[in-house]
Structures are given as structure tokens and as C-alpha cells.
Image (cartoon, rainbow, N blue to C red; front, top):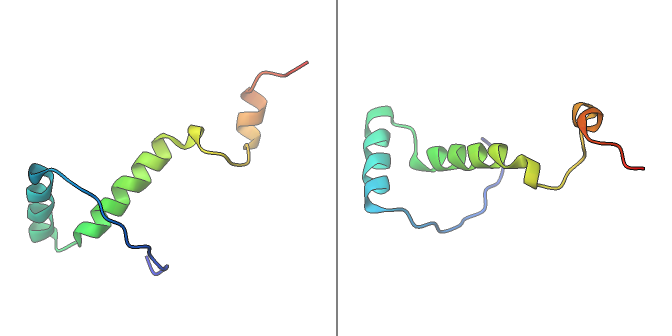
Length: 66
């Protein structure tokens, strides 16, 4: 991911921190990469709540207004 990134602060539980550190130690993938992947998963899961252009598939499935 070569795009610019915005710095932010998050709070995780000690258990989450420990498990992320263990995952990093075993895979050598930066913890920030796992956090960004998790954010992408959440955004994908909830994308129906986000504004945006409707796809043709969604337009065909949505009820017609009189």
C-alpha cells in the first residue's frame, strides 16, 4: 500500500495487543497492516450503510417507487 496514510490513535485490549504482537513475531507483517485489513473488512461488511452510487445489480433488486 503506497498511498499516503493518516495517523490515528486506537485503543485495543491487552489481549488484542498480545495476539497482534505474536502474529507479527510469527509473520513479520506489521501490526498496522493487520489493523488496516480489519478496517477494510468492517467497511466491506457495512458498506450498505455508506453513501455511494448504486450498482446496476442493486438498482434492479430495489423496489420501484410510484
